[in-house]
Length: 355
Image (cartoon, rainbow, N blue to C red):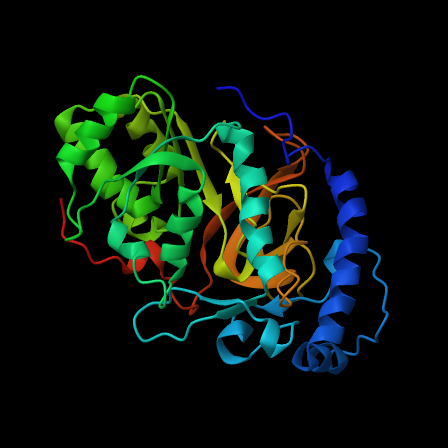
């Protein structure tokens, strides 16, 4: 598969930190000026206006949960173009992310830069492992719907693998493969749905997915309960369907447009050049060394309409190595949710009928 020459996985860790630190420092001031609540938070932490930082690790972070309880934005009310919400579990509060027109345009642009590394520059025929109903209600747009719609931009001749009753549409899948299965094609879906509504259907009907490129994310909990981890997921797809080009990604609505992409070898996630991760000790909040698990902090230069550039997540992770993998920079894995953290929504809240 030919990939674009404009890969955003090119900076060594030292180059990345040197490039990110001044931009993130400027963003901290930008958000401080643009929103009084963020300014109050930093002041309460004793961080003066115009403060400088010696490393990315020193930048002040916000817990992602704050977006559930506070209005945090860096643009005036009359410039808010769109409000995105996270897809929390039933009854849970949702994050609200405020975008102006520029931010709404930036997010797909940065996502595109990241995904073209593995997709190349051509838009491929696309099999969506979801139902078209998820994107029909634009007024109440969930993170899952936003993810499906955002990914749809990278494909053409879209076919949905589920019907509007959330059941596998086997004939639609077969028809897509008959028309496009002999050339490279794109598959997108949330992880558990991809397993239950594509892998199990493909295995049962002996479908050939060998020319596919799968992009998937989220929903691992149900698979772990079935003793299917990432390695098993990749092995079974390869053995039973011929699909080997598989890229998991890690991302969230609070930093939409920034995704941490699984490399070709399949063992780790990598940071695009405009982003990074810091793994923090949950007691001291200092950065953990390579190989020691902790709480994942995600940093990105993309968020300008709200203070989402340095976020402490509710996920556990570990950095496996630095500048020693498929791509430069940190390579890491997500180990799961913090104890007592709310279960993340998205595909884990999917309640469709079983195949």
